[in-house]
Length: 537
Image 1 (spheres, rainbow, N blue to C red):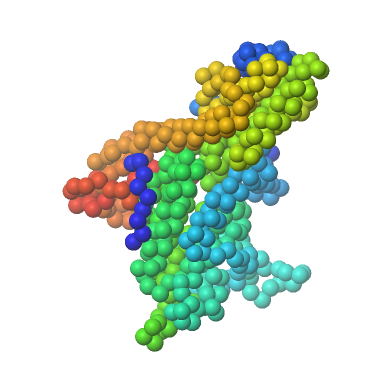
Image 2 (cartoon, one colour):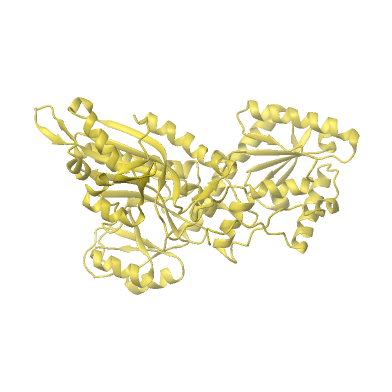
């Protein structure tokens, strides 16, 4: 078994996204605060000017007032996505797609480092393929989108619009695998998937979404298990080290196992409303699909055997997880390692004769940071005030803002603000423009923000997990919106009873388990593992 990363313990889609106006009192207070900071930095635009013309285009519902409304408001105001014309679909806008590209960039490197190659399979799958694996068709049947007419004629066999690709992959693997010399076969594809969801939520659950799905075939069960564990470890490291999301890796219960798999491994994340998000999965498929499709090979002894397989995936749902883990009332908050823009530079001047020197300094600072590999953008538009720009890039979650005004040019320094620390507490004045000092300072701040977001999420997660020793304690924890962790060895029927009575499900049996003897909190029988229960998306 592969070694695991050891980490700290534990709307109506048919309506358009709406932009809300910032209340006048809050806008004035925000502008006054920004005006004071700008004056200290040598800013030219007075605070009063920042209130003209609705300096803030959109406003979000406070998280504490309505988490779901807050979430959709942030998606709109940060320009991440919008609803498509077909109910339940979404259009991913450039900024939202750039976050998905950051996820792709990291995972693509890791997939290739672990011996996988990218390829692509057709989107249309014969319905007979889905029917070949009994539990698979039963699990996916309610979500299937079917094509029955093509070219104006009724098709001889209806086609399934890809819900996942295990069936068509096996069809092709059967053509390509004949001998042990053809193994292991390890591939990945970046694709879109269609599942006819009844209740949708942007990024989290939509009719169509983007993902990567890996598929591998092996000569032995042990090799397949090692692969499945290796890939959940890749996802875990990504979540912690890049997305700053402290997921809990573990094994799904039989009830929650992927349709057609022997075992499903998962990474479970706690969102800002304390609901669980299944952020990535890795499945040991055993020989279920290879037997259904006749995917066989001749081993070294001349014996014909069925291959052992895995599949694993992360989707654009992870973007939603980032929003709901780190965002606040000011909008999105992005970990620097996945932020499309790590630093925004806002030039500030009042008089015409100050503009040239300020922009010259801005250009110099931008070049210094770009050459150091920092993703930096300059907003020198004169159509918006500095105060509007401050709010706009806070809403988009840019980790660091640099302000440069006439006084900063004279002092050869800049003002640096952190997105994760509000108001004056997050501001630093007089940071030198000298290249080595500036680069080290900004890189240090980006690292600080990355670590701070992770630690904050860990603290939030751990403070909302309750250890329980009875069913009553579980009910109480779930009713308070928390996660419940306790010994479990009860039946599938008991698990379904918990779901029916509390709306909570077993999220996973964590890989990291407490030592000592345990009693199942449901039955009183001996239990080898603790399970985590929670309400989920």
